[in-house]
Length: 72
Image (cartoon, rainbow, N blue to C red):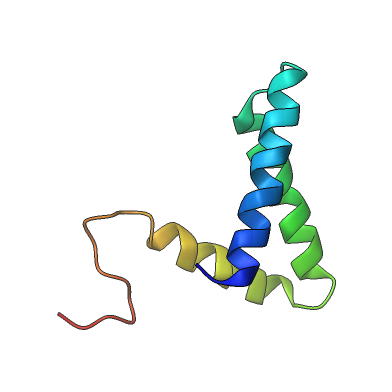
């Protein structure tokens, strides 16, 4: 795991724990975080680029499907 992945994982786990203590479902926190991530991206990227990023992520959700950049 990279340093940035470890940092985000640590902070996200703390956020989820804090939310649980306040009775906020992790699904609500995840949707709110996604909205903030999109806001962050939109500060420096076009909406089309952000949409492409989200589309790629959505297209890569199926664990039984190879990523687009992988070859069989």
